[in-house]
Figure 1 (cartoon, helix red, strand yellow):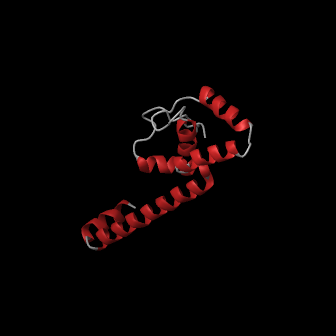
Figure 2 (cartoon, one colour):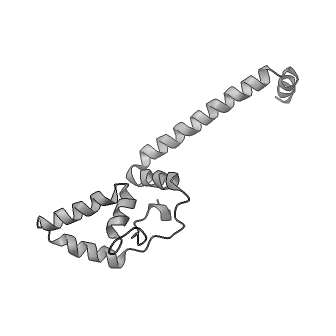
Figure 3 (tube, rainbow, N blue to C red):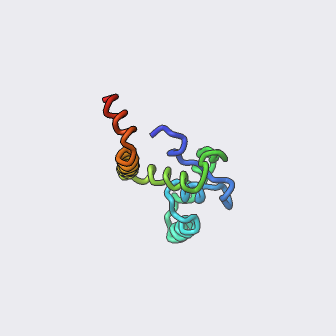
Length: 125
């Protein structure tokens, strides 16, 4: 998974302070409001290393490129890849099987209704 779409980026466009919470939300697919609330609550509950980690990510993580996703569907796909690569691979295989099944149905319909084409296909086999 060396694709630039599977890396963590700070999202400066949708971010409020340094873009870290927005980057975490983009990376995990969780709503950014809940990430921000979680960071504030954990900080107030005494998780002392969280502000240090926040600033470290804010200075060290690269900024998200503007051309990373073509649309929301592609963004959702890559979030799924980051969350569960195995499940995403199964979903892609299932989509290809569905496409193959539908193409076979179209082919059988067209071939069965066109005897000249059917004879040509059989001759080529």
